[in-house]
Image 1 (cartoon, helix red, strand yellow):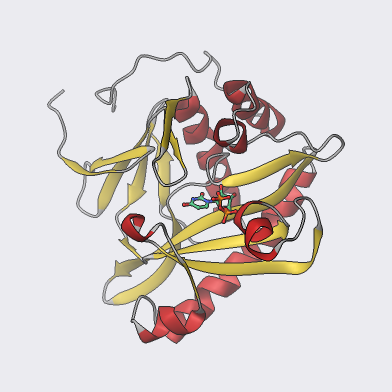
Image 2: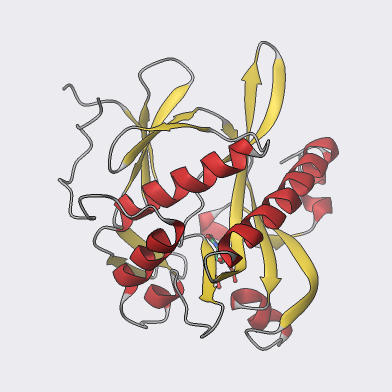
Length: 254
Ligand code: UDP
């Protein structure tokens, strides 16, 4: 098959032109980065697992009325998505104190938060995705007040649903990052959930033992990183049949 045109290459994913206008192919790599690219590595099979985990979560969210960019999974490492205009704001939803919130505010990791907290970061690698206020988002025109209202309301619905879904598998959804995009359909614009939801973008702790089953195993050199991602997939009931050791490459689009 002829190589498709690459639209964008990020740290963990590549976007290719899709088979029809308005579609893209999202390819999941095994590459892992942390601390704004200062730490780099490979987690064997991560791309395969994240493709499956993100597919599963986007489908479940779609079923409960959350619009997403996801169309269908194409193969082990690729999914077909709708092309959207990404809003340059990372939405971080927190249920338990961890990571940068603990560091910034001196709240010990693992402390229950009085309620779920939604934070916004300006999506800009050069600036290290700085935390910003709602005011910055609307004043600089990254999103309109109406769009931000919609993003907040979708994020809270997503949080209720995903917290329950993960809790049912013995995992605490500590925090995670969401991205949204604008989808244009016949002059109508809708805000849809984009990017991915996976152990790369979520903190997931075992409910009983507080064992970390997410990218913190890579960030903090805790070992057994692949096993942690596999365990999340196993608990969701979606371990790929033939295991994560597929043929690398992106030409397998059917
Ligand atoms: N996160 C992410 N991408 C980012 C920043 C954060 O997916 O660029 C996720 C991260 O995995 C965690 C949550 O968002 O689940 C909150 O991250 P935090 O602000 O604590 O930053 P970190 O500790 O990851 O630097």
